[in-house]
Length: 72
View 1: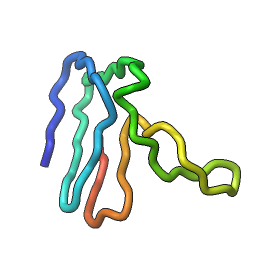
View 2 (view 1 turned 180 degrees about the vertical axis):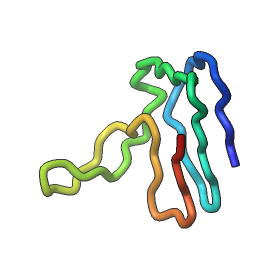
View 3 (view 1 turned 30 degrees about the vertical axis):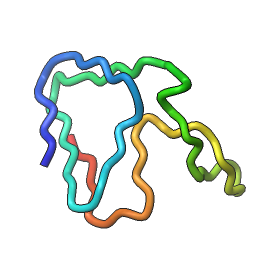
View 4 (view 1 turned 90 degrees about the horizontal axis):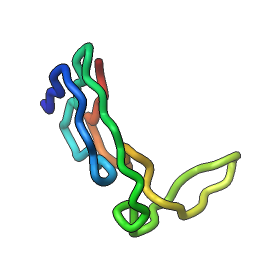
């Protein structure tokens, strides 16, 4: 379990969840993502308007993982 307690956090790239992870954000916690495009490479498979395509990684990326949860 990854627990994010109350406060503001600057994130410098995408968060990638792996198998068997619960990413829990407590009340009062804030994640502020910096936009540095090179940090969101390599491109990953995404889905947009019923089409699969490669694009920059999302802020939180989970692909083909099991038991990966985001709660809070």
